[in-house]
Amino acid sequence: LTVDVSQSVARIQPTMYGIFYEDINFAADGGLYPEMIKNRSFEFDEPMMGWQQPNSVKLAFNPNSGYATVIKSLHDGEKFNFCRVEVNNPDQYVIINEGFRGMGIRQGAHYDLTLRAAKRSGNVRRITLELIDDAGNVLGAGTIIPTSKQWANYATEITATKTEAKAKLRITFSGKGELDLDMISLFPQDTWKNRKNGLRKDLVQLLYDLRPGFLRFPGGCIVEGRTLAKRYQWKKTVGPVGERATLVNRWNTEFNHRLTPDYYQSFGLGFFEYFQLSEDLGAEPLPILGCGMACQFNTGELVPMDELDPYVQDALDLIEFANGPVDSPWGKVRADMGHPKPFNMKYIGIGNEQWGPEYIKRYKVFAKALKDAYPDIVLVSTAGPFPDGDFFEYGMGELVKLDAELVDEHYYRPPSWFRENADRYDDYDRNGPKIFAGEYAAQSVEIASPNNKNNWETALSEAAFMTGLERNADLVHLTSYAPLMAHADGWQWTPDMIWFNNLESIGTPNYYVQKLFANHPGTDLLRITRDGEQLSGQNDLYASAVKDAGKNELIIKLVNTAENSQKVKVDVEGGKPGAEGKFTRLRSDDLSAENSFESPRNVYPTEGTVRLNGNALQVELPAHSLSVFRVSLD
Ligand code: AHR
Image 1: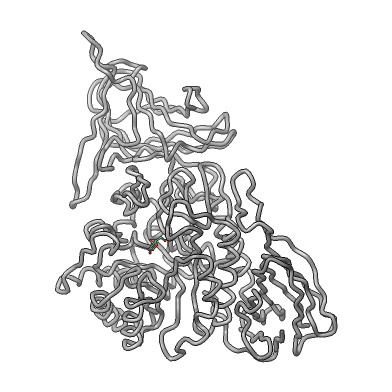
Image 2 (image 1 turned 90 degrees about the vertical axis):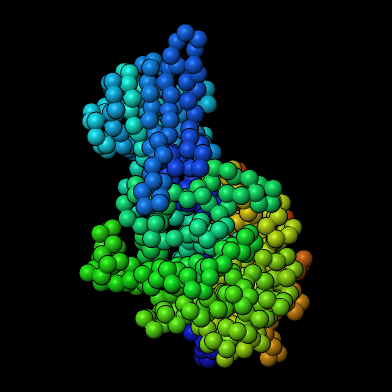
């Protein structure tokens, strides 16, 4: 192989390796947003879902010990329910919240319990809040004394006395009477950046460690909604948390024989928090908005063209929310939430994974309005869910005619497809739109099969494919694996890059492949060839090379998908004879190897050193391996 370090073929975009975030698999409530109370404001369609009241049975000749009724109320068409408890039997009547497949608590950790209450009649004197295990043992407690007949906020702190992955919260009432309750919330104090009611620290850390170039949010199909009425509307996700609407999650449906009827969006993780997270990660924010087409895998409901305006206005207003001055209406909302400085958003996506003429019609309207108002904003369009075929050809053809800037392509395909398509972009039209490889993942069984595995074969095949993305970095400007994360007890789709339960989180082999590429993106693309040809699977070898101009280092990524080790010699033209370097490697002899909560480092990067022999990097690549070499050019 030969690499010439003096010739930069193209700049690598800082956005090259990023994150696709979607609230699927309990990735928000129950995941990144570590609220521990499910249905905290009683707004699920079944209003007491998540809550039990075990002692409320009516006894013969006796009043029941108490009873909770959800009072339904609407405000501007949105639900603002609350719960009325009638306590007849002091210290007997309890309500219990089950959490998101339980609540993960750690011994010695502190938790903030907050709620809103109003005394209606009688005198409910005290509320006792206890973390309990399955057997009812108390693992930490706090008390609240309600004092007011008006709605008021109350808070207490609970310290856990034991670590437990599936705790529950039991609420006991002393005194008799009627009490109204709302927004019963329990959060760990130990959050990302120690923000009050902030994000789950271990999960954000995994994202941070990727050093992503962008954060795409909030999805995925969730953007579109099962129906238009249930689409994601960003305006309902900003402002005070207690005033945000609750919405049934688009993934709260039978999907691949998995049913999660308790999957809702509290929007505690809303658009402000996504922008803030992007900033924390040093990633460009990339919101994707609905374009008036409900999820095509479902109803495919379309907004009539003459009713598209509110959708376009939402996009215009989002740009103002992110970037507008504090005295603009939406810039003020951002400032009031604590971020007067603009978020400097540069990209916006129009529709997720839509296809066909109906998409193109709607995209044109958005593009005109957005570009007229904000000529510099980069629009992301979509070519549908298939990497080839008639829909894709049609969409791409139309988008080329429209001078689209960035097209989002998705591919959920078998591992072999990824290995065989590492040259996908080698001959792509350089005069058309740039590419956002926005969702991809090798499927070990078939697309979204519940039996798919995040095994080493899928990850290694993605690595091979990614050398092709990188070799074409003049064309491919953004890339991201999908979906990002999944709760081990609450998922709908697999494979996923990160798995978590209520206490732990692990990176899959696919996560570590992403990390190796994203941590070594370089700044300039170099040509690495064998006999003048790109290496894209010949003899099961794949290669890409970049330079990190800041550190003056050469970075070479080599993937060996063969069953045997292979010796490789790379002549570094323009390199420094005898230069020293390092490598990071991922490998496993077992293509079915996975990481698990018990063995999180089964497939895990190892490091070593290298030295050029003269001007050549001479290495032996182990079977089934990805190696990233960094060699000094000084
Ligand atoms: O990543 C899961 C789903 O796959 C996304 O929501 C959708 O865009 C795609 O079909």
